[in-house]
Image (cartoon, rainbow, N blue to C red; front, side, top):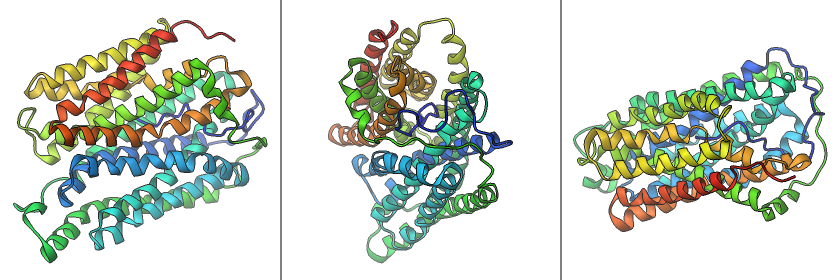
Length: 432
């Protein structure tokens, strides 16, 4: 996904710096690329812990999808306050604040495990996500400012590659550390004190992984603190953080914002179900850990697709490319749900390749010709990432009601159908 760096989350009409006037901060590009890697990777770890928590707490799919609901609700709740915080304390100190909030969220997994309480895990994930949002508020616009305006697109594309690298590596490592059974028992065979002990022991692998991340975040925050005054020429314009919502009355932008909501939701819903889907006897019948490692194929496809898509978009209309890949995603869902074995499994994983160019293409088509309102549009689209909370939850509800993951995938397919319609609708340049 998942969370693309093309979205600047400040909502001012002229958010930070004068146009074409980059801030002076030698050596900080590498730091910003590292931020993209970190928040991309941490977000994709949700796909690993969902099946683990589902088994430990004997959850149905609706309850398990509360992981994504709590995580992505942070975009709705923290997005605009996060932008205000950055304007008040600046980029570098804002990055430190975000990293520390992420660290606190990781450490909250310790009491969640000790109390063997699912709701505490959800709270920890919300706090962790709040830190991720703040870090994105810093990283998204900052990468554009750390160099000449003429080369900002190449820097953004390169940053996207680091984001995708994180979403590819973290699930593979996380599945090796977190997934896999403790013994021949499962939570639904236990009760009382034995069940609590099993949950505490089973969640310890999750705790160990996130404590390790917390230590790494503390080290990064300490390094950033040493360079907190290195950014020169930073300034922020005052403005209304809520004024951009009137843009939703513009058909092209409103349709595009809806598609961001649906795209993030569909991408996250599929990623969240990959492990459970591949474990089904009628698909690939894999063990939990083996299925978890294949999450990296899903997100790795997005990384590869970005490089391919960046070349294709130079010569083909972005709207037509968007419509094509959205219809490709629908076709892959149809193939997956109507076949068995390796074909069924890998056709679902291949949807990651179709997802690759969707976010930046929808964003650019929706915000085309917004002029001085472009940053306002970016702020609204940041809120639309909340789709990552809603669509996966509804997909879980559909899976429980129908008793079939194949049926539940009809909802992401419907999301892609609407996105294909937007590609056709926006295939021509926007009017001024």
